Image 1: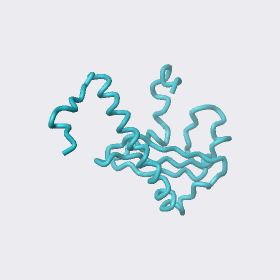
Image 2 (image 1 turned 30 degrees about the vertical axis):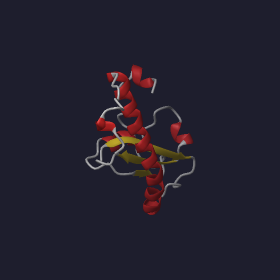
Image 3 (image 1 turned 135 degrees about the vertical axis):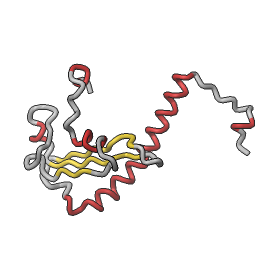
Image 4 (image 1 turned 30 degrees about the horizontal axis):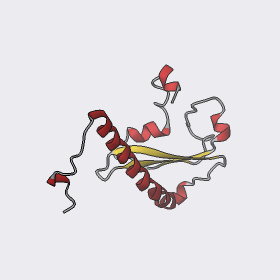
Length: 127
């Protein structure tokens, strides 16, 4: 993230950027980074990352909140043939990440707006 300060476009060619540009964000599997146009963020990154999976984290209204990124040092570890299994696994984590992102956003709103909840008000009454 520090590189963004000197080069605001540093992440524009990444798999995550592709997902953010999709009309309907969907998981992307890079079977083998050595065999595709995998954009390296630093020299030699392909020596460490051989296979990659990027999963969109969506809100209940299908807003793209974040992405979950998994890397492996073995080519074809994230095989396209197992896409359904990877989606099922990532969904478990994506739900929790989405929940946390929404909590963080709400906390920022409260902090920035100095919004105070009046718990005595009937609007916030438990029944």
